[in-house]
Length: 406
Image (cartoon, rainbow, N blue to C red):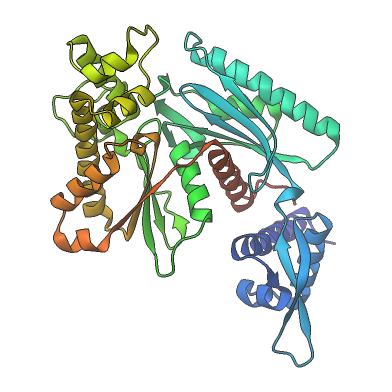
């Protein structure tokens, strides 16, 4: 008679092998049973049992056939079905929160945006978000569809081991136990991650070029973060807090406690702060005329329009921002020697091209050999893509850490 330890070990091995097969098909795409057996090292009989189990739970579906080496034999292709489960994705920004109920690939079933009142303190804002998530959970369960497998929260900030938010300069938060708060209320696995990394997941799933082994993703939205791709996977040992590296020794103070941080000198907020200061000094004549006595707060679109209309003061602020970004790019190239740097952010959407200035500055500052080897790409990761990135990251965590109940 088997003891409990033996039964437990068998069940654990079953779970690990199911996870191994599912992850292979999920990452590789449609695959035949013989190929799965060869790549996983599992026996044909094990593959038959595991595939049958995953088909029953709709995590895999059959899709077409392919010729095999066996004469006269065709093998059925299996593909991953991300609609088998649902997840809740929460993207927290300084001006609002987007909450979506999606499948495991980020296709939204329901989506809601919450505009933030900056008078709310962190706990009040989180209570608002939790109420909206609660409504989504209740509605999804009442509908009787696929089960909710977990909750993913993306935020601009330093997130370390065990999904612990250490600090978010853009939100002015410190050490909020987001994971514990949401898990206690909804009894679901909760994963918290820096939103630059979740956006990078979206970009990585768009595919890289043949032969590209090393790519860096730089995110300029709500700070400056970098994510390192190596061999088509995200290198999570790189924290990527580039925005809190010092680029000006005696620069302005940052919420993180440092002075002269990159994100204080190269961000939408930095451009607006410097432009407001210039306006207060009687400069920026074109921008002043465009605003024509407006009392509403200055926004980035107005600064872009003034630069495009020839405001030399605003153009100078944007150029300075691009130069600081170029210094950061040069440092990234010297440290990582990537084949390509992908840069995302509204900051790049200017007529006085910060992107162009930054690339020129970076190439002027690095070794000529390194400069020749790197390519630069500008992207615009929108709200829908950001939600997809959270879902894709969440699927990775759910399956790789074994929290999913097979």
